[in-house]
Structures are given as C-alpha cells and as structure tokens.
Image (spheres, rainbow, N blue to C red):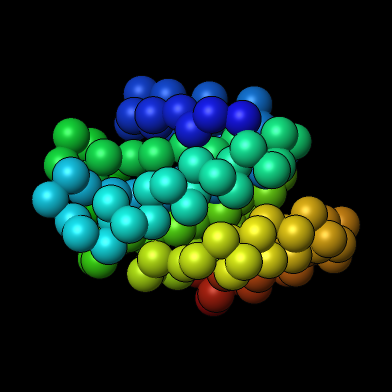
Amino acid sequence: MATTDLTADGFQQALEDNDILLIDFWADWCGPCKQFAPVYQQVSEQHPDATFAKVDTEAEQELAAAASITSIPTLMVFREKVLVFSQPGALNAEQLDGVVKAVKDLDMAEIHKQVEEQQAEGGDAEQS
C-alpha cells in the first residue's frame, strides 16, 4: 500500500477510519528522514491492512506541535485510536516490520481497559 500525506484537516478522520495508523513525521531538509522514507514505503507494501501516513512537519507545523514532535523523523502508531508507539529516529526495515507486527498482536481489549482506568484516575484527581 502506498503511503499517504496527512494534514491537520484530515488527522481526526484518519484516526477514525483506520484500525492501524502509522505516521512518519518528517521534513525535506532532514537527512535521516530521507533515508527512512524508502524503508517506510517498502514496509507499507508488506502490510496492506495498515495505513502508512506521512506528515511534513514544515507544512504542518501546528499538527507537529500538537503531537509534541521535538525531533524527526518520529514514528507514531495508533491502533483503534489509541497511541501505542511513539519513537524518534529512523528504523531499518526489520525494526519497522517488527513494530507493525507487535502492534497487530496487541490485546486491544486490555489496552482500552487500561486507558479507561487512567482516564478515571485522572478524573478523580481533578475532582479531589
């Protein structure tokens, strides 16, 4: 599957529409980003059941800021609208493939339960 460009306008819809969404935050001037791009493209073709998106941090500065991107490339992976992986730095194909497979193997019922518990704890703290 080809990678798609993601903008702030389409971000929420991409989260809603995709069970697994990988996002590569990059910039044209970034050497490691350029080295990672063909790896990202190659691995995307091996996983047609996941969506591989790219965010140009220069064109989408507000989105990059909202995602707290401080170095690039940064890879974020969402599964069922939950951020399950976030790491700066370029990965090789084997590492990226491993991340995708690990995300597919996650017990999302357990993760949703943990998220609900964290949100409940946060809500209790605000009410105290």
